[in-house]
Image 1: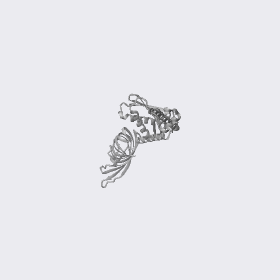
Image 2: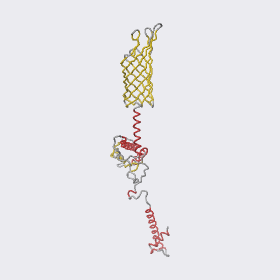
Image 3: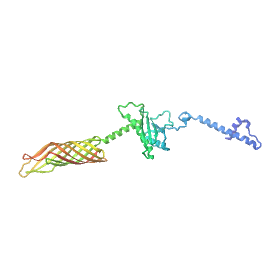
Image 4: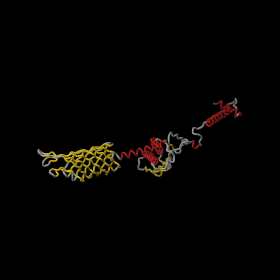
Length: 383
């Protein structure tokens, strides 16, 4: 290195050739040699740097000093103006980057650089507007619109604020893209990239899942007790199929069988067997039909096909008769759903539309008629 520098010194500064003699001559020549070496090295380094071409192309000095973001998929840009608490900017960016990564996106800082052939699908601005309030602004390139909201942070613990801001920004972004689900929405300003379409499709699936969860099907087995003012008392069971067409409105169809308690007449006994069918409208007073406790009111129609069979005393003839009875019903119930199972308890009254009776010598001994009191205990499973 010294020989190269010395050679350069000889070519450019010939008058400074070192000479033999007192030590003073050495002090004269050494700085020149060292200076020549430094100049040579500097020019060589400059020539080497000029020969190198940056991977992203030539940029101006201010752009070259900014950090380069290399997104591997669709990305968003974010800027954080305003008077943020020291250290909070970085925490918000970290939380937001993690939230977007789950959605399939990368995140770049708006004051940085990215490849010239790439553009963010949305631009986020998270600005501290005043003490304890952050305004979140989304400029959605896909749908070509601006949406914003303000998030108050004063009541939140300081260590949870970055996560709250990230979640709010992510929700606002997905709300903007939800427009793509609307059948009558205007066409997007730009063709949505696959990552955006995936977010929209997941949102649609979640809506369907929530709607399905809020409108469940239930299949229940119920033990029922019914007592009539005409004298009949029935015990039995029903299979119930229940569908909630709205979170507060449901329909139920029940089919079952009952056995009547034996009734004694003057010349024998009367037994009864029943086929039961119910159509019931249910309304929610409070609670959720798919989870936890629920209180309901009931109104519907009950139809009973009743078969009476006489068992006569010795020497007394007996016969079998059948008929149909119908009642308008009302009642209330309490249910408790836990996971896929549900327990239910119901009670109510019924008013007769038509009745049927068992006769002895032309007089009614027992009947499915007059006021009905009914109750049931059920165990159901969600379909």
